[in-house]
Image (cartoon, rainbow, N blue to C red; front, side):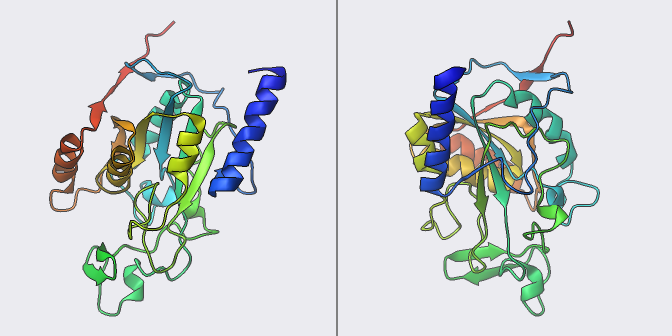
Length: 257
């Protein structure tokens, strides 16, 4: 886009972001990087419609990346480059960001006698307890420094209600509190979403399932995800996504020039 068309698209994006509570990338503490320094090595073997397709990049944040993340997902560092590569194909790119306040009730540290990965009952259902992670203002909350963050990126922050956890980029876990992402995408004319990021068996899964419920066609890029895998949660995610009609694809190598 150039000239007036680019200006109109930028203004419209900012207006929609303000209306629905999602945030433009260009804000304090968020790096803008067009990823021009790295040659793409992976690509989608799928035709992308830049008007009606969107890429959802889920929680590729420092605290989910080994070796130092507070809730590191094994192999999480391996998705950073793949996510950055496939991003090139999309006009509409949305990042979700876990954005917890200190003392969030999903943290095991807030429950006497409980340990990370124990389960407790909350008013909205069973909640897994986690190590303290992605606390606002900490390094662990930041996106991985090697992740491309295009200037066209929109950011949805989730998990900022101290009493409700949030896996999905569309809803908090109570399934009542709406992040505004669905309305934002529909306003842009998006009908299909591709989902990548962390963790496959939690935040990626719930984002994909909610997207299907909301009427989007959904594709999960499997090699751009890694999972926690607690007691078979990856196999369960595979089955749930398939039953919901979510497609799974893999990237392909880009031939060297």
